[in-house]
Each structure stands twice: as C-alpha cells, then as structure tokens.
Image: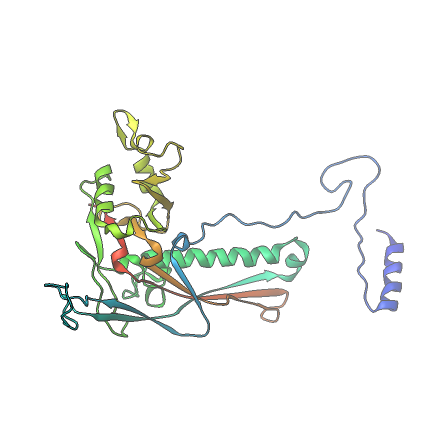
Length: 340
C-alpha cells in the first residue's frame, strides 16, 4: 500500500474539498493471472435477449396522453336497398341490416416494476443502469404480450400472472363461432366481447388441410392487404415443419425453399408468437389476420422511469410503469384455429 498516494489524496482533498484514492497497485514486472499484473475491469453489462411483443408486428398502434379509458366505434350495416339498389329511387336506410354503430369501452391498464440495486454496483459495473432500464422495458413488452394473448379479464382469481381483472383483454377471452360478429355495445367491461371466427382442427394433430380451412375462413378482401400474416406458437411451427408428403417436408414443396422455420404458409408470412396458447385440445395456437385492422394497441406516450435513492440505505430503487390498452377492432379481419 502506498502512503505517498494517501498523502497526495489528503492534500488534494484539502485543496478541492474531495479526492478519490486508488490503493490498487500493479504487481511486479513478472507473473500473470487473476489478481496479478493489473486491476479489475468490467465489460459492458448485458441481459439475456427477450422476445418483445410480436403482436406489434403489423398491428394498429396509437399513442395517447393522460386518458383512463378508450372507446372503440365501428360503423355497421348497409345503406343501399337490399332488394334493388339500382336506379334513382330514394329508399333511406333500407339495407339489410340497416346502418348502425357498435361501440365498446376499455380501461387503460398499467404494468409496473421496482428494482432495488446496490449503489456501489451501479457505480462499478459499466452500463448496468442503462441495461437494467432497457431490459425492464422489454420485460414490460413480454408482460403485455402474454396479457394480450391469454388474459381473461373476467376471471380474476387464477390468472393474475397475465393481469386478471387488472390486465388487458386477451384474445383467448373472446368467444368462438363459425362466423365473426361484434359483441354487445356499451361501456361495461362485459361489452365488446366479439365472436372471433374459429376453425376446429380436424384431428388430434395439426394437418395441412387445417391451415387451408383457416385461410378460407378469412374473408377474401383481407387476403391481399398489407399486414395479413399468421401468428403461430413455436411448438405448432415445429409440428408444421414435420408435416410430410411423399417423404418430403410439405413446406419445402410449397414455397418455403429458404429452409426457414415455416417462413410462409399459403402465401402469408409467419410470425412466431410464443405468447399464444401452446397447442393442445381447446387451445388457440394459430391466428391468421390482417393485423392492422384486427388488433389495435394504444400506449400512453411516455414510459415512466424513476430513480429513488432514499428508500433503503445503500440502494437505489428503479421504478418503472407503462400504461397500455388493446382490443380486437375489426373482428372480421381475423380467424383462428382451435385444437381438437
């Protein structure tokens, strides 16, 4: 230990009011290894890669500031005479069904987290503070994706991990039917539960014809729209990759020559989505939709990150929160497959 360094530090402190004294010394001229020949150096901090919310790939996204609820409105019905729309006769609102509106209101939800970190660690490890914040934002993205896929906001007792009554309205909470239909109108939490057109898997295992039936169930006006894509659980993608015809993988015969993990199916791109239900009886592991019309995600314009240094001695607490709301908007723009 060098007393010269200590004396020099004291002199600097007297002159400037403070000083930092580094008492670590390099070793002798020979030798190498841990603790010999140098000081500690921290590489930049990093975190495991997270899969950010895949529903944002193509979905309609909005930003708002300071609102607590969001109302969605859809124009429904027909204006032209359903018997004979031709000619100049005036037949106001004689369509079948007649013009009307459907509307529903959803509350904005919040996801939050608190991270206590030792102050000394934040000072020592390069880039740790920035990495903690970046990883927290991605963790929020994971949480919102799970809630958008799985949460049933009417069942608050057993689904708290995906938000329960405090979470988003998950796709799994929407009723299934042979044809799509808007839910009831109103401002109650039970309104706007639309019926999503659902195809039932023919057998216990997914088959090529199941996908053909899903694509057929999506109205043809959405087929050529930009943003129409599959969202498929990775386990289902694995099962699809194993489908064979004449001893060859089906998706090498039908346009997936790149050898990717089923990159396209029936002409539509595939988005791997691990937040959907895993393939099982009664599970929704496959969706085909024009996501720009099918799903709307609205975010508060700011993600709040605060640093609190007085909550516990020697610690800094990072607090973060994000506010978001999502809803199926054009229910006719999406179809799903349910396991047999």
